[in-house]
Image (cartoon, rainbow, N blue to C red; front, top):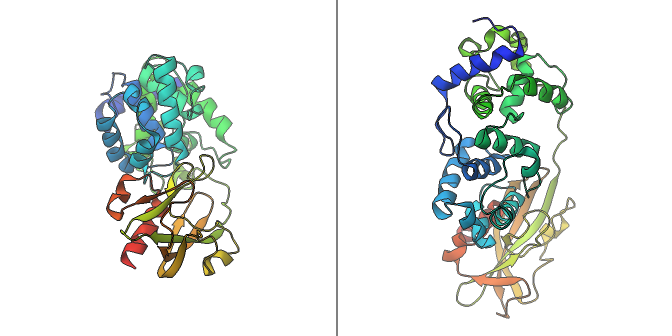
Length: 349
């Protein structure tokens, strides 16, 4: 059918979604609302992370903590350990804080409005709208990367992101129906993920092709401002062993990058890199015995190169904020991906 206005888009898209909806572990079938706990957990995990990656993490979390009350009662270290590999660890800390608040202040039930949801830790504009729409059938304007791309192309918006976001939100608000708003949001996500893809959109399969103003230039949209080049920081990490083979771990400060996670002691990470060339930062209770190569890791805003030193403890008393851990138990500790790379280098070097 020919589509002529924003109010015509939802019926066409929902009819397509009823036939082509992706099956995802946190989703309810089309026409039904999903469990708010499942929606919230998946949406927090999906921030800056792909659907393919999140599936296994979601299943593990749900098996270990079936309800928000179970998650609230968990130890933060256990949550961080299960989260390891998903990155952006502030999400895990806020996930735990949010679970505690929902369990203690709301009796284990998530609030059902965008405004109330945005007052919870780690829930911003997008996540609040997604939970309100998908879990509570509220007509909220949901905007993730897929929906940005679909909407940009539908209306041929050539203003680069993020400057185009106000216009995008206005269009999504106008398109979102009062009936089945959650399914509409998920249909937009699915359309972007499977048809209106970043590289070569499959326009011939799109249920909205009749009204897509941007089809002739779809592959060039959305436009983005040029990214700044990421700087490279350098430093050293120390694999310190004591007599029984245990390795020294240190907890990072609660606030800041990788807050609250465990790490191997090391130097500061700087762009000068001089610390990576010597044993600056080695605890006084150990002495360097050799090197185990280097590792490279990329964070959101910078690249990191770490030289890995082997060291032997000469005083087996753990310094403040440190603990000993046998190598075979490292998998049970809240080690971020960058530190797992350090461990791999040390164990194989």
